[in-house]
Length: 114
Image 1 (cartoon, rainbow, N blue to C red):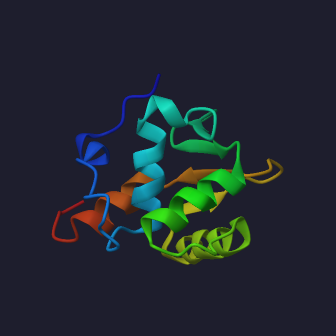
Image 2: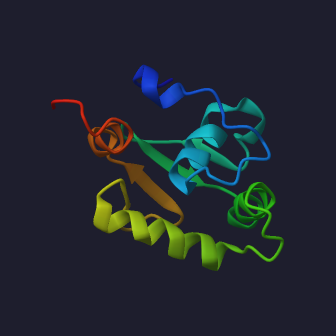
């Protein structure tokens, strides 16, 4: 298994909370065993694969109260994080992304001196 920094294991935001960001929601799913058939860590540190894109989109839609969410819309939201360098697509692997954990730390704790 992977050992991630403590900040990656934040208590999940309340289920009714629509404030959660997609990257944090993905981290939540990755931490829960019941979603391993849907999304899972793989390969290098921080790399994950979305095994069931439609189900991940459906779960995200439920969390955000957006019943028409689909993988197309979700992947567009993921692309937004490329520029912020929070995560990127793994070349040559379908539905596979990789977190840049040093950036995620900075996003969470901007006053931290890195």
